[in-house]
Length: 260
Image 1 (tube, rainbow, N blue to C red):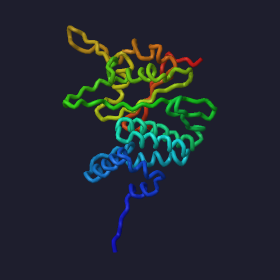
Image 2: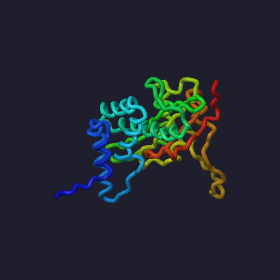
Image 3: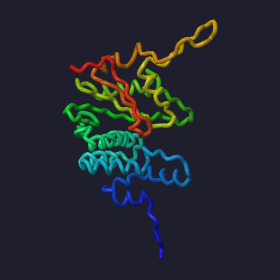
Image 4: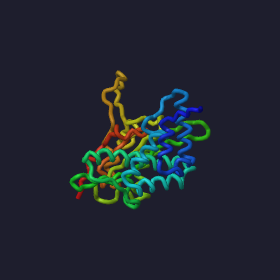
């Protein structure tokens, strides 16, 4: 008699509501990575792996089928484009993270409107805040040279320019309401908080006493922050998280924001 021992992935796959999604190139790549890391005994990110993504989709589907179907449709259509699919999953992670607060009575509802923003969270008092999610993944050139400038202010790949591009080219954050930009730093090479704070401020600066060559002061220079630009006047703040761990997110509020 042959005994087949099933693991947690087998059970998750068998009960998953959308088998076509599991067969996409994107999800299959995550599946291969999951088994490779587990068999080698390497660290497996608990917030962004094959099993966790399956669970995120399943929980959203239980809450609202049409929203889960919308996310899945985008992955299926772009399954060969890794970066685009990663961006969709960033939205999935953010959306799913509000399901527990909603079940606990801390949030009234979660939704999205394609022409409005990625996630809309309604509080129990009826007020809403609007989340525009984007996923930052540095480009690695084929010549082997690594040039990561996400922490700068002017580089196209910087957090600041990616944020401003949302306004200038996509028309985001143009309505007077509680808008938040939600940024997932989706690569281990990105320097966590420094990336965000350095790019949104005028950089991390160190003042040195020339005679002694010792530091007399240092810190982020907020004299020329991104919040002083007209493009961000309707942006209440920036939320950021690293590699899927939205529950450990941090928030930077716009001191100039005043809802009319």
